[in-house]
Length: 185
Image 1 (cartoon, rainbow, N blue to C red):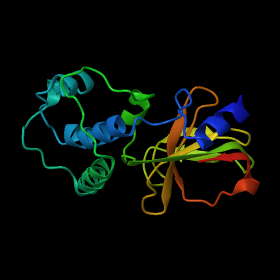
Image 2 (image 1 turned 90 degrees about the vertical axis):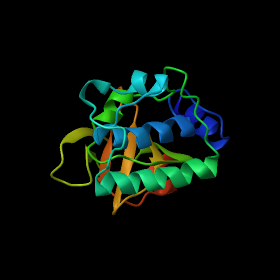
Image 3 (image 1 turned 60 degrees about the horizontal axis):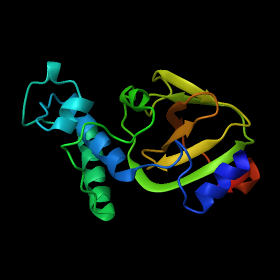
Image 4 (image 1 turned 60 degrees about the vertical axis):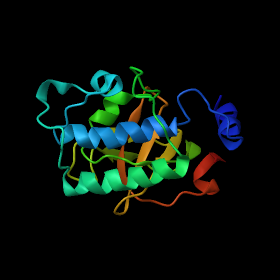
């Protein structure tokens, strides 16, 4: 199975729950920042994905960190020429609830890669770019690691789907073909 996922990723073919729907991911990330700033969504998609019960404004002011994320997302949305149909009522994003739990929002870039069979030591994942942030999971030796997001401030956002899904931030690290059984992307 690992070899199959590696081959699919290397060929650019979407493996189940492995490849991003980049425009959905970007729309979600940008709008999660607005949701956190109290934005009241008017579109069917915004209302379906975000809870308007605690919204306060139609003109949100994002935190400085979230504004950086929004600016990065807008740039990548332009690169991918994203146009989201906001009349629909769902997004094609796996583990949406886990993503909502992240204190620091990861920015998807659309260029996935993977380490199939991590050979390194275990890594603790965090909800934010801080060793003191809440722990969201652990990536153990032997697991498959997906790299789908921009590095930020010396931190990398990782996803492992070996036993359900673990995701979160780790201090940036080096990985090569020698630290993985297989490399894809």
